Structure formats: structure tokens, C-alpha cells
Image (cartoon, rainbow, N blue to C red; front, side, top):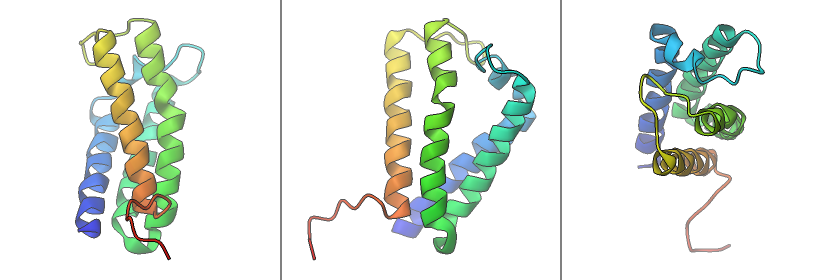
Length: 128
């Protein structure tokens, strides 16, 4: 079950990473203006998502991939925060406060899942 969950999680990252290349403009718009080279950053984060998604699928690389994806998800959250505080539309859609809170909760869940898949979080009740 753990492996199947990792595959689904990894595929989602690969698909989103690919969209950084097929639809880069929607991501460029949410890159905070203080950061230079927004298109390059979109491509870079796309590569990171694809690599992380592939790496978390394989048990041999899952621990490191989960940890790096958790760090990645924290590092890219400023784009979501920029969207929220500057009322920037994503892919033509502006979110209300509730929508941004939902995005934050999803981001936190993705971080928790990455750490669970890495083995750093264990939700089993048994202790050794």
C-alpha cells in the first residue's frame, strides 16, 4: 500500500512539473516580483518537481526524495503567499481568502505526506 501511495504521489508531481513546461505563463504570474528570472524559476521548479516525483516512486530513493520534496514545498510556498497577498490570479482564477486557506492546508498536507513517505513520520501506534 505504501508503494502504491508513493506512486500516486510521485505521478502527481511529475504531471504538475510537466505543466511548468507546457503552460509556463500561469506559473510565471505567481512568482514574486522581487525574484529575478521568473521563467527560469518556473522551469527550474518544474524540473525539481519531475525529479522529486520520479525519485519518490522508487524505494531506494524515497527517503531522500521525501525530505527534499518537503523542503521544496516549503521553498515554493512564497509564490502562493504572493498570490494571496497581492490578489494575483492563477490560471485566470482569483481565489478568495477561503481558497487561499485551502491551498495552505493542501500544501501542509503535501509536506506531511512527503515526510511520511520518507519514513520521517510514522503514524503507527506501536512502539519499539
